[in-house]
Image 1 (cartoon, rainbow, N blue to C red):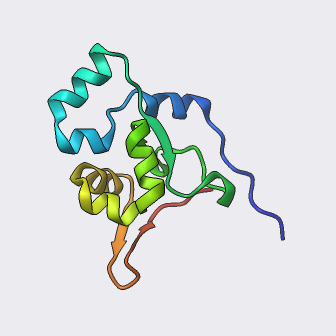
Image 2: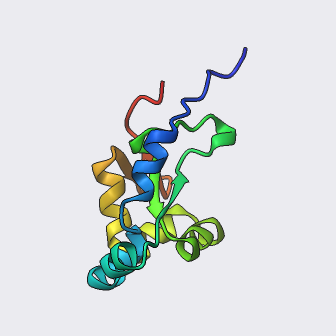
Image 3: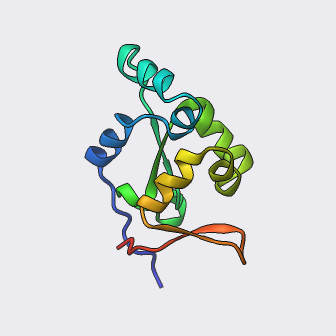
Length: 113
């Protein structure tokens, strides 16, 4: 059985790069806006379902984060990041993810293909 073809969308990735980092926005929205717009700092799109696992380049699977927060999410995981930064949890809910307390993780509630 072969893996489904991954959705690749440079346009969607670029759109996410122009959204504020959800970690920074949680800490200080004004500073995050200033960094993004006045200093040209762009977000990195973090794939919630990894590219290696077939995670598509769709808005529901992309979390905008700056470089330090992107490194942090890989270090501590999505559940810890969403607990630490309220805007990340809010973004996940808006994107169609649901918290499953019994499993202790966020689960997608949308079609990826």
